[in-house]
Image (tube, rainbow, N blue to C red; front, top):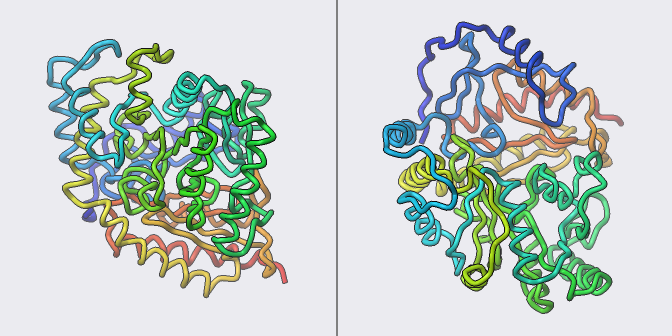
Length: 453
């Protein structure tokens, strides 16, 4: 597991203020008004820590974007990256066969459970989902795609139309054929109070939606196996297996989006392993290379792969199956498995849940909490009746002040509406995990003051 590094030397000639000013002057920022934005400037990272040019250390409690799964700057991966740079080929067109493409495809076929044995390599998760939409439509000859409102599938055009959360609104109108449904655990509406009720009632509701839309028109349903930015929400017990059976009844493909929850994040290599159901298509990215370089993939079952041996797959971009990125993925998978980081995520789940339970007991602003592996979130409330502290697609001044406090205290994470994310690298130790929750404990005093009644 990670060890606390020594204070690093300064690398850049620029200080934080200069870096931020130049970045704001000459670059654009995602999901933000750039004017009031005050980003942190990082120039170095190691293990679970990030460093500013001035040497201030931050505990990375969100693996940047739930993606640096093995921790920052792992020496074994860096060494393999240097070896790849010194090799004979840094780029090959996606029409070429390369040794690393052969090896990584075979490796993933061995690692992914079931008969998902063929992979289409992309440069990220949204692109993997775009290609999964194409594959589902081409394979089935149907057009419509089902997805959930409580979801995020990426910011490219079609992936944005599958996305349910309000980031979709400004990107509409979009392409046709996308049908969104409520989740078995929506934000406010309830399908029941127990997992059994939620599963039974939601699947009954979903089957009625399928009938309304026409089963013969629906190619696939996309689900985040464990919902990510919209609350780190595992499905109710029995739901994914029930969904699998329902979709099979109508010849609809199940696509599991594991861009965020895959590669050990939940305490298993793939999140669907928890829930007793096998997807037809699996999408992945982020943890595949620990985000050291861009890479995503779409995995398909043998039956779907056989279809595309006889029929054209109408998709592809210049950097698909990029040899350097594939080499980094090989190295990351080796480290993740050799150092049992997936097992560490499973073991640390108990520590995280205990810390969260203690926070809820102490802080009136804590509404709820969840964690599966090292995939966790804390919900905040503005009153003791459980009203969420921030509105949908909004924030709250107390949450803003709390996040500023975390920056001051050396904790890096993000909040999404009323939810505080707790998703550190899978290499984190128990001591480092408790270090992060100690800072959160102090910061929650700020949101406690905003609780009404």
